[in-house]
Amino acid sequence: MKKNLIFFLPNFNHGGSGNSIYKLCKNLNKKNYSIFIICVGKCFYKNKLNKICSQIFELNIKRTVFSFFYLNNIIKRIQSQSQLETIFISNHHYANVISMLSIKKSLKVKTILIERTSLDQLKRAYGFKDFLRKKIILYLVKILYKKANLVLANSIRESKDLAKYCRTKVLHIYPPSVTHYNKSVRKFKKNFNEIIILNVGSLIKEKGIDTIIKAVAKIKFKKFKLIILGKGYDKKQDEKKNLDTLIDNLDLKKKVFLLGHKKITKNYYKQADLYINASHCEGFSTSIVDAINYHVPAICSDCKGGTREILANGRGGDLFPVDDFVALSKKIDKFILNPKSLRKKLIIARKNILKFKEKISAKNYEKIFKKI
Image (tube, rainbow, N blue to C red; front, top):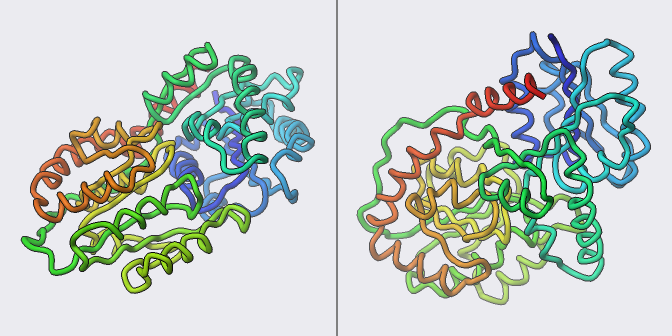
């Protein structure tokens, strides 16, 4: 029987979560589902999603919390159009909490909460207001998640942490990450005349980009370029000014480049010799998967979330402690001196990412949608 699927993701931008939901919707069997999207503000993937979705609701509100007053009316409107069973799929802790507080039981909607990042994100604050907000959300997560029909996480590690904290069953499904597996063979440099280091992600504090900049400032090999792609979610969270100041203070203007968001990143991955992720916490970093898919060895922070599973617990890439730029600089120096070790790990990583194909993920989600 056909079902309504309502995906609620407040910040539907070009980041990992928006891309993951787009890929999932693209691969679902349209004969079995009518798909709806709810977001706050503009949907970055609107043109693409219009081809596969029944309707996209872009809420004209300034803050996600105000969606509380809209969700029930939108669900009613969708249900009035058809008598299909409805599944409401909320994404991210703050949206999940709002969903559980607002959706009325009388609507008879099945609720699935997807945790797309680590609980650790709520345990690390950047200022008093951020601390207070996260403490409230963390408390509500513990109370409300167990009331949902199903809770999903992006990784095995996070599903265990979440289940323990909320005392409820949590399943895991890897997000759709690999669209086309790159089977080409890459010729690696025997010696580095210059090394190109790449990072792709949002310019926000929790991505730890300052850790990468501090690390490259300490490495012994001085002929390098650090390319950083991405921008902040908004003016409040954008770290560009702080990172520009750090680059100036470390005299790295000619070596570190903040290039902003790029729609097409393929050539940057192809030119990179090394990929670095220094996040304080992650959900499931598709940029790390992309790097591996383009034959780029990876060094990543050993943060909570899916990073360890992407790197096969360190067999597919190097790990370093969160925030430890000294340890990271030593890892970079080691790679430059002897790249063979990390390139051997890349072989393992490339085999490992086969299980992150988007079609596999979509099939796993469809099994859930049928059973719930």
